[in-house]
Structure formats: structure tokens, C-alpha cells
Length: 444
Image (tube, rainbow, N blue to C red; front, side, top):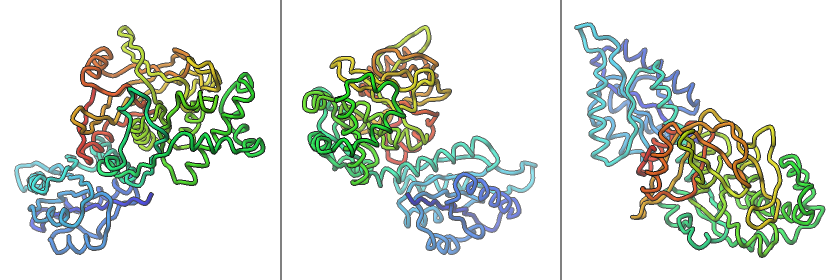
């Protein structure tokens, strides 16, 4: 993905330009450190003509508009007229307060810009402070990550394999809705297409997939040999299809099709796809797959996908679990990603492990309200050093907020029963991402 963003320092020449110039240089250094794809002007843009000359030379995916000094609403209006991309509005702190001259008057300029942004009905992120402040660095870094995620989703081809089971309609996506709200392209096929592909492969064709799986999963030799071979055939089918069709994430039907029509579960295949960089959800939960994509993109690591199945008030924990499709890389080192059989169907291979401890995690879900509008769930916590809680895969999260209150509110607010757990704190990025798309963001 090619991504670039523009730094647009606006102002007028009647304020203290020595102060403005120093902060201009410091701001450029910070932005280049955060992401070198930044497009910067050669000098402060101290007139609308100079602003327009710079704007004509760039085609950004994101803009950082900074009031280097006061600037009236005409400046930001030119930016909004030319670009439809998201905006970060940055106010500089007054460098000196000594009873004499007002050096920058950046804050008044921010009010002018904010007023114009609202007139244009454009969502934006607002940051106040100097480039050397840690809070400023953190918030700008999060905003740029969110802008990258927004663009990445617009370039995403998301594969929906089969239909959701009866009663799981919350995960079913429509192509038009996915395109208009998020910009992603939804590709839909039936599970029988991949089952049909899997059945055509010879033993020689699946050899490398068996070898790769053997390096990722412990104890595959304890599973019925035919089931292991058929799992490798499914692994090749999913790998081939995603590569041939430029798929970036997927949701897959699992039960009953793969048990009944193929005789082997798809759980372990989905776990491996996550480790290969293709976020994959089960039970055909397409919005779950989209949630996993956001989590993985923002952290650079695979996310856990599962149901909230247990809550412990004394430990302040919520346990997330699923039948056995978590990424192998999340497994505890003392057990590794072990092979097993499905807890209900007694057919393997599935994945069996508890997840390793993680100092910071984020629980998230891109879901829908009863009126059809989308919203984002987010809560932070720590993944504890806990063994496998039930057959399948599990992760135990000690939440930063009160776990009992979180569960009670989430149930009463009508959230879907599938969540992603991201390996890292991405709360600020999700909040900005929600603002960019006009989605309600709810922190629990």
C-alpha cells in the first residue's frame, strides 16, 4: 500500500516568525520520525497563494493542518475544497507567556479552522500542544496509523466463504454495505468451492503443507492420518485461493459443512491463515474478520477471535474462547499449539492451547446497532499467564475497567457474541478510525 500524508503549516507573517519557524522545524522532524512518507513544504505557508501552490503539488491520503500562527478560515477552506481525505488539526502551545507580545495565536486559528471544518461537515482529529510533548507524539502517531488503516481497508478484498449458520446472522455482510461504509470489496463464494478444490490435490501437492503444519502444530501424528491429509488439502485450497484472488482477510463457514461434507474441520487452517497474515474468522462472521483485520493491521500481529465465555469477578477477568482456530503464534511456549479433536464433533485436527501472557491487549468489535448503523467496541486490559481453560483455544483478559460492569453493559447494549483480542493497546487508533468513518466509538 502506498500511503502519504501532507503537513500543512498555515499562518500569517504578522506574528513572531522566529518562534513559528523553530516550531515548524521541530514539527517536520517529529512527523518524519513518525512516518517518513510525510510531504512537507519548503517554508511556512503564510498566505493563501503560498498554500495553494503547495496543495497543487501533493495528493495526500491524510492531511495534518497546523496553525503555525493564527490563520483565518479561508486557509482551511482551501484544503477542504481540494481534498476529501481525513484531517488532523494541530494547535501549537504559546511558546512564551511573559506579559508582552502574543507570539503565535495558534489557538484562535484553531477555532477558525474548527468552525470551517464543521461548516463542511467534515470529521477531524484535534491535537493541542508542542511537538516535544509526549501526548502530542502519541496522538499524532495514532492518528496516522488510523489513516493508514482507513486506506488499507479501502484496498481490501475480503472473502466471505459460505453463509452464517442459523442464528448467527449478525456476522453476515452485504457487498454494497461493505463498500459504502468501509470501502472494502466483498468477495463471496460457497464453502463447497474450496472443498472441491481440496479434493483434487494429490499427496505430492500437499507435502509441503504437511511439513509446514508440522512445524507450527505439535502432535499432528496423534490425529487420524486421513484427517491430517485432508486438513493439508484444505490448507492448500485456502492458501491457493487467497493468493490467486488477492484476498486480504476472510470469514469462513465451518460447521456443519466441513464435518459433514468433507469429514475434517477447517479450524486449524484458519489459525494458520491468521499467522500467514490473512486475518480469518470462523462461523462466517464477516464483520468479525473485518475487526480482526483492523486489529492485526494496527498491531502488526495476529489477533485472537472468540466468544466471551467466562467471567471471574475476583480476578476481574473475562475469558474468550473458540473451538480451536487461534493463530499458532499466540500459544503458550510451554505447550505450543497442540493438535486435538473438536470438542463437540470429536474430529480433528483442531488447535488446543491457552494463549501466552501479553502485557497490553485491546478487546474490540466492529458491530451493528439495531438501526443498522455501525459502531466500535473497545476495552483494554492484560492477557494473563493462564493455561488452556476449555477444549479449544482460550485467552484470559484482566480488563482495565471493572469486568463485571463491562460484561453487564456489553450484554445490555446488544453487542455481538464474537470479539477480537488485539496484542497491544490500540485504543487511540480505533477512536480516530471511528471518527474518520463516522462510526460511534464506545470504550468499555
